[in-house]
Structure formats: C-alpha cells, structure tokens
Length: 123
Image 1 (tube, rainbow, N blue to C red):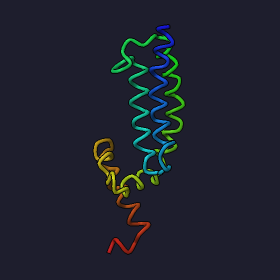
Image 2 (tube, helix red, strand yellow):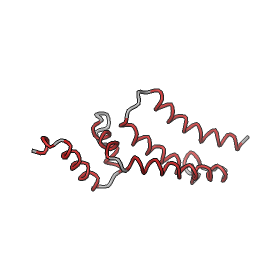
Image 3 (cartoon, helix red, strand yellow):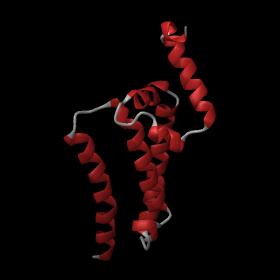
Image 4 (cartoon, helix red, strand yellow):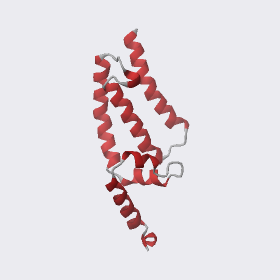
C-alpha cells in the first residue's frame, strides 16, 4: 500500500497541472511557467526531495525516465522565441518569471527579435 500511496502522491501533482491547463482557456503564455513547474516537480521527485522525500527507488527511477521525455519537449520550446515573447507580453506576468529564471543575454536577444519584427518601434 505504501508503494501505491507514493505513486498516487506523484501522479496527483501531474493531475494538478493537467487540471490547471484543462480548466482554463489554453494560453500559449502559460507554456513556460508550466514547464518550469514541471521541471521542479520532476527534479524533486527524481531526487526524492521536498514533498517527495522518502520515495521508493523504483519510483524515482521512473521519474528520471520521465525527465528524458521532458527534456525533449523543453528543448523544442526553449529554441522557439514565441513562447518567451508571449510570456513577456502577457500583462499578468510582464516578464516577472523570466527575470527570475533566465540569463541576461536572453533579454538582449528578445529585444532584438521584437524590434526586428516591429521596426517602427525601433525609431
């Protein structure tokens, strides 16, 4: 029963994220924050830290396999400027999340992309 309880604990966190996306209108600007949240969830689970302290080794191994899948999709998202641009333009966020997570050179890159796509703003 303990094993099943631990699996339920992990899956319930995934369910929370799924419900968050499913119950609201899908918004591309939520992609990056969701992926950051998922990253934290997977890392805590794979290392049996935080709310996942004491997880069975088999469960942590399964979560580590999930990280491989996560990295595949995160790489895809990270390579597209669209996701970060929508995050910056979202009035609820206005870049707060990005300020805490990204390196300085991202802002220079983002500004240049924005100005390339909106040349009238550069003058």
